Image (cartoon, rainbow, N blue to C red; front, side):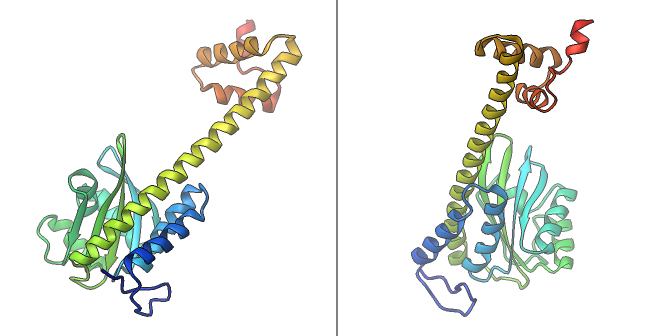
Length: 244
């Protein structure tokens, strides 16, 4: 199988493996930036999947609430908002019931009559939607759009599925790296707060951590937030209240 688009849209036909190698390189360049990876996914999808003119990535929370995360134009964002409003559409079905949903002609599709009518009015002719990931009650969807009907076929669907697999791996990697950076940042600020308590009260590191944990429990706030406030202000949150 070949892909009939290149970076310039000139209609050359690199092999699918070559195209996906390029996709992998493009997505890896974001180095753990989740928002950057999402934007790179949408841009790369349009360059890679034949006949795709627009692309959007959204999260579906609790299998009903749609949260647009990245898009190539206002068209994908508008269609996602429409699906959110109606509680139905191919994106929702892709993440909730099927891995792939193809809409050959939005104007005549009978699966979601109200959505089809209004999406066609927005200028959508065809859609191709893929489940991107499942993470608890949060699901991801990759949605491709064309302005003409029957733009996508079985070959395009197969290419899109391979692309979605690459995109899912890249996004998972970016999320993991972001969590690692957040965890390291949290450890740093907790260490700073512990240092302040140790110096001020001449206590051990374990005792300082116990103070932070107790305050976190008493105020029903995250320990890291207690540490941030202590590091910023030099005072233990709620200290005056506890002295009363």
